[in-house]
Image: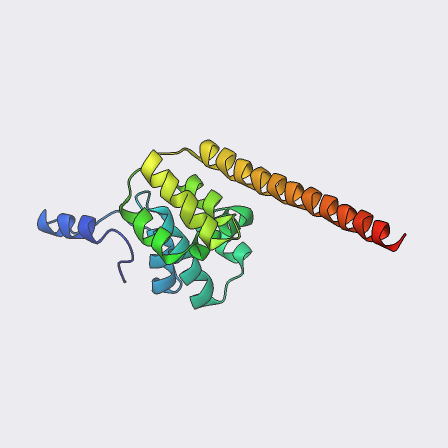
Length: 173
């Protein structure tokens, strides 16, 4: 037998002189089972969890659905968690030691396509202690502001073109 999980419990039973220990005996790849058991721990931070899911996926050639079945989660949850792996390295590194961030904040950041925007919002989250809702509102506000600025620029450009056309038609006549 190979102990996949519960090494400390096993050693404690040995120290107590017990000859038996309650255990679950299973067959399969011990490495894979250990990785899955590690994922079930509650104290993994979101980045570690996403990285472990990615390792499971790559090492055993699993699809996201197969990873979900192996760890007892829905495929959409796996897909969402795996997105955390796409975050800039700086965010992933800092989020491990920054205690004010939770999984939903990292997922929200990962949904953004632009790494520069991700880093800017990350800075606000760290410095201002923003919630996910605040982060979403800020993201929407910035997008609306950019659209508004583009519309203003386009309107100004159209006025300028109209004025040039008017001036050009006056010179011809």
